[in-house]
Length: 388
Ligand SMILES: [Mn+2]
Image (tube, rainbow, N blue to C red):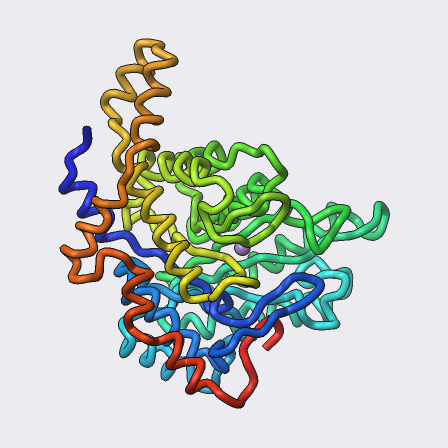
């Protein structure tokens, strides 16, 4: 078995990033159900994120989304984050909520629209400068709904040109990460539909461009851990967007639908150096809590990642490699299953006590009375949500 103190040290050093939009109102195509106490501005979102970090000890980063988190003074926002004990993580761009982007953004046939999209991405890099964020996170809704609607190759050319311009603007300690998604909102051809397309663009751009794996952005049955292992081998895994899905891009709590898949992914991360800070892999949650209370849902999600990480770190790698070298199919599989079937909850409770935290993060949050406080205090104003 691996050295337990080394496993605990790795777990204490883990940094999980939560999304600012996970604290605001969200919904499906059919309805957004508002929740009492939801933040009215990015400062209140940071305050909520700080609660998740306070309860878990391993969620010190908050991802922003522009324009939803636009403020007059980004330096002040970053300073407020520091006061709360958290940091600004990745800056997520948005080129999908403007009428001009109906037929696409960076791959749009009209150069005026492409200019507008690239200008938005450059604004996001300015915000990185002001907040100290090191990563620009790109996801494009670009694509077509009908065969013949636009030229597939021409769209790739336009995408490539836009990415190059933004890449050239990055500072020495900044990088861009490109997310792919199989379909939606485009239903025929998406311009960055899969990891291969993202990888090819990133490879051409250079070392500051890496791939984002959103666990909900694949066809059913895709072996995501293979993609993760391949990208780590190539030094091209930039970030995760963790969430769970039963059908498409459901954005449910990570580990809720398939905790075994999460373990398999994190096993590849552990085995291939993905937890080394030098590799710069960001572990972000990209989730929308439509029915459940948002802060507890994010705490639960952080715990789910932490539990799967603990199990992945418990894999006996020398025994696994020995079984693999011997061609021991059942033995190798048993090494993995032993780790997966380990109940790590009491170890994590001990770990939290060592970190000066309560053993149960959800208990810690409830005991603090924060949920009641925000419902009482956040009266009036406009609640944050999609498009606001
Ligand atoms: Mn995502």
